[in-house]
Image 1: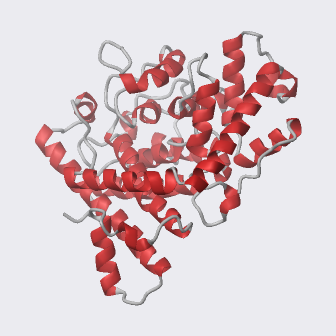
Image 2 (image 1 turned 90 degrees about the horizontal axis):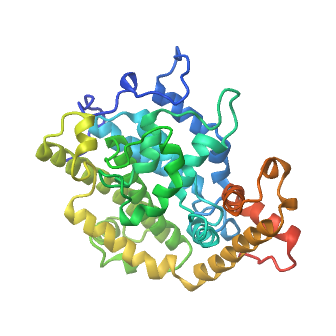
Image 3 (image 1 turned 90 degrees about the vertical axis):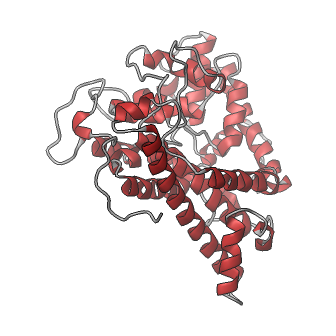
Length: 399
């Protein structure tokens, strides 16, 4: 089934007119609905701008054409909007959640997150989804009336639950989400985000869009970096078949053009698959309302079984060839050392923290550690390296 360019609004789509509202009530905008305002607040946030200089896989020194955390986020948003449009979901809420999904990432991508999590192991750990919630509810300081961005309940729900429920109905954290639940407990005591339920369909398609972007664009970046050859993807399900068709049609074309053809066709195939599979699930589960989406026993949006297998095969292919390639691992190990050094330095003495970060901070180790983690998580790659050079004589050259 081909995805449709326009589609009537689904009965289970989120409706800004029926939003559960904001923690701090605000006057209604005459020009934008609630979800559009949320999206615009993400775009104008400081945390969003910083994504420009945060690692996706390759640090900025590797070259100007590789994805950064910002360009990855924009690509996720484009894919998510296409899915929302084809399924009749709310595009503004979908875009909000796609743009916000990586706000909590520290410098140096997942390597930086692992290092910060290790530093915080005695203080609740570090989880980038929970950090995104801290950013939009507390750390952004743009408004005189409140901390954070005062987003709607639906946007906050999607930020913390786009990958599925975090707890069971009794409130016990699911095994893979224990760290995240603990980190957001303080906020959920003020505003119940119903962590036991699925998030909206909009949040779910934003999460699937992230997978699609990872698959297609990490293949593209890895090929650009010469980590493997284009012919090596031939055995992969779906991607390999697409490559065979492209190679046959464009005989003699340079690899760069062939790579672009493969990645764009792979994205299109995955979007069409998710659209068709989500329609099938909605019909099979009898989903008619957003409440039924949240109360469902399984996710509404996702890949069909064959495409899920293809998604898994791509990730398994990329793991040793890209994410664990010696060249990438070497740089990421040095980047992790930068994060660990900075945390230890600030923890040993707060004098080197900027005044606005040290102000009002108690000597209690847990609150001190969390404040330091907030500061480091907000750093760009370049700022983290510059701070490291202030305090250490052995700052690595991440090339």
